[in-house]
Image 1 (cartoon, rainbow over the protein chains, first blue to last red):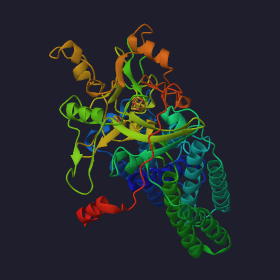
Image 2 (cartoon, each protein chain N blue to C red):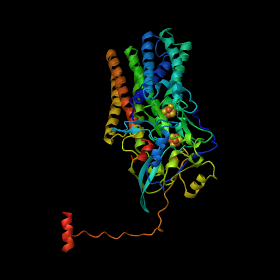
Image 3 (cartoon, each protein chain N blue to C red):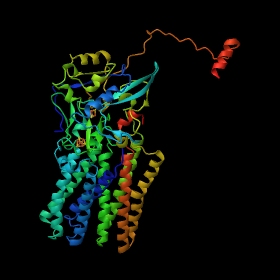
Image 4 (cartoon, protein in one colour):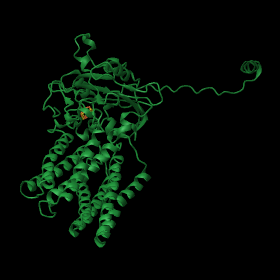
Length: 311
Length: 244
Ligand code: SF4
Ligand code: SF4
């Protein structure tokens, strides 16, 4: 599948944003953070900013972005529509929570309720994003039990690493949050390795025989219907050389998981201003790594239509 | 509404005979010609006379070599929308632009609602949907809704353009939901098959596999060609003179 940057950035940014929003919504009301102005302002700004940037970027993928509002109508059948509804609905409790925290300076009562509701909405929205891909039968690498949990794990992971960088920045460091960031990054790493292992051993029942209805023997493409690349080949026929895939998998592992873990462990031992810088660096490096991971998620996915082209 | 109808009164579709298709591309050009001015028109061409021709087509004909223990053969394979009974291309659509008609089972796109998110083309395993980059919306085969119900055409012409154009009658049109229709009999007789049945889209269109190789055909080996060798004598001299 063609890795369009608008979609790669969209899923990575909203994943991190919703993860951070969910953590703020839960940890704030739990008394983990004091209802001070700056942490609330920067934290909510970062979370909602990432979400908004991601959603805006996703409209860049549309042929007719001016009609995007229509996408809220088919939530009864379409995961994409459900995602649209959930993402917009999340802004309501998230906005109330942010206002209560930043303007009223409180994290109890209805503000706490709004925070918890925002966290629930954030998790639901990430599930909807995951299901868009997990429900697509023609792409075996996506239509897999690994896809939905993957989206949730990566969202929690990048949200937690961001949350840690935020609190470190305000000298509100917590060993628990640091440890949680390390553990979630390890979990993300393990999940990605397991996903790759699953995909590399995938036995797909769909092949050129079932695609053409020609039973038995071998079916070899002699001639395409066209000499130039068409929409199908451009959109679904993206191919990545095996050696590049291997290299990019290494880069993903280093940037998204390996380096952030080292930095976070170092932050455990370092004194405040340096620990804050190192934590911020971990979040930035991980975000870059997740962009590579998401690029590969598309580039390594194969669509059944390519069977017709003998690819 | 992108929810699927629980039942369609008819199941209009095509039956394609892989035994008789000669890969002449007549259906491809007839489809383009009709539909570029039809319900989903235009079928935009990008850079049509340049080096990177691209454009929207509803029907594409591939050629394959199928080799079994019986021997090898070339199979020409037209590929277009199969108007599936449970098509995910419709249910994934967030806008309601894609829909399946309850009356005849035809899968269509309402171009005025489509936002061009392309998700339906990802959800179609058969590559039947092509995005029009010029108009910014998705396009696909309409089973020639603007021909098959068209009172301005003679009754015999009320079939999809591809069916009308096929010189070998490899394409048949009819109601596959009616077990008594001629097209259903044809499918039963020839053992028509679904494409990628394992994905569960339940295509309406059926493909008739090529008939088995037969031993009945007379085998007439052509005489071996005469070896070309230099002639001697007068004729040889004339040949050499004339060839030089
Ligand atoms: S062939 Fe593809 S576009 Fe046509 S109905 Fe089936 S899934 Fe939809
Ligand atoms: S491209 Fe158009 S028809 Fe296809 S899913 Fe998106 S809105 Fe629906």
